[in-house]
Figure 1: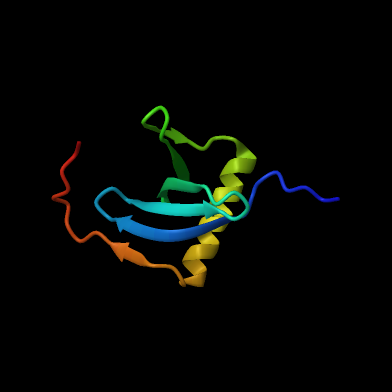
Figure 2: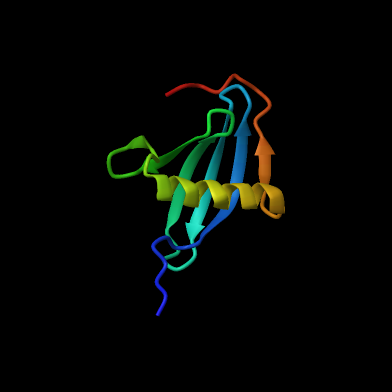
Length: 95
């Protein structure tokens, strides 16, 4: 029996934020149907995951977790089958 340490991530939406040099993404775990929210900094090769309980962003630093998210992100970008948007303004209010 083969077990998967990481459930398959399916990215559902992406919003590119050029003024922040990052992509805001939502993804769903295929097996659990849990929604995950990420900030992906393509140039810096960093990924942050939203922690809803703590109300903050946490960097994905574990090598396997990072590779899992990054590969799913790159697949979604290459596949181009999900809604993707670009925020055209830098007038977004910072909360």
